[in-house]
Length: 414
Ligand code: 5CA
Ligand code: ZN
Image 1 (tube, rainbow, N blue to C red):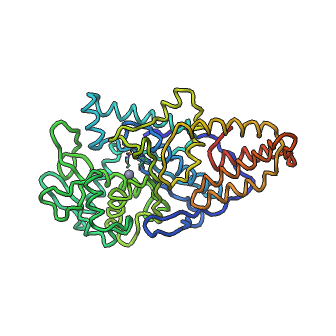
Image 2 (cartoon, rainbow, N blue to C red):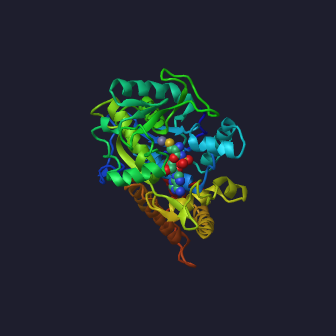
Image 3 (cartoon, rainbow, N blue to C red):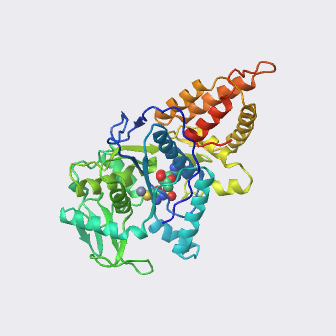
């Protein structure tokens, strides 16, 4: 499916340091390093296209955009893939509820998402892939898993045996009770009769009346959620790609099941080298989520003339792995901050730029520490504007250097 347009990104005169990330699976810092000359490979789970794009989505995608940019600034080509879950239970349920054709709903919301990402200057994936168009890939992967003895049938549905992956559980590190709880809360069916293990997940859902279905060697139906991302990521990126990303609500079951599918298909090769998870953005005391309906939409803010760069700056003031609450006050602070920043760069000359460039790049290479990078820019702006009569303008070309790093590393244009 069509991606969105790439913004122009300046290249920097200095090379950024290698990027280290907190890995959910090991709990450690890892610096995923692409093979010589090979691109750094990134898969970020995309939206299920309804109620998009809320600020929780935006925070997650801006977070991984920092990784995309940090890798580019460190001299890597980046191969970035993202899916759109354009057929799945929650999308179909919403379409039925609001009496809209599910295809129309998915297309409309995906288009809105593209526009929001473009406005926020998120670099597009090279492959932006729908679940529907990837059904042949899912079918192919299910056949491989079946040959490995990891698939069984319950009525017209096919299930994946989690016991087939000796490394099952390593991605999340959760104990069985926690897995069972999250599985039930996040789209799983632990109580379905006929399953060998309550944690086994559906990979092919046999046709149901009133639901879309596609032909397959296993009978008509549609793919399960996890097989979709496993198949797309493996096809476009291969095994042991550098980083699997998404929000922390995907740690289990989604990323664990994806890893399980991939690791049974290719024993001994991990799905990804690093599993990186963004924190959850809340609003009114709870996680911002479609099911709770406590959503603030990027498009609504844009329609009320909020500068998308102020939205981006408000997001960047929080570490991408932190859980935090969205407030309007912080958005309006970001609007004021941008005005000050613009005043500082309009001077042309300013406080010395080289240290702030170094600090911004170092902060982002350090597990994408955007708040630290933004603080360095704040300090430079403070020194450049100074208090009356004390402005520091010792560097004649400071503004150009600061503008370049703001754009290349943080995705902010002033
Ligand atoms: N289509 C699947 C992934 S394959 C999905 O989870 N879609 S989603 O629309 O529900 O979420 C899209 C992305 O936004 C996921 O990475 C999810 O983890 C993230 N996300 C959802 N809600 C929040 C939130 N409140 N804060 C931060 N990230 C969120
Ligand atoms: Zn996914």
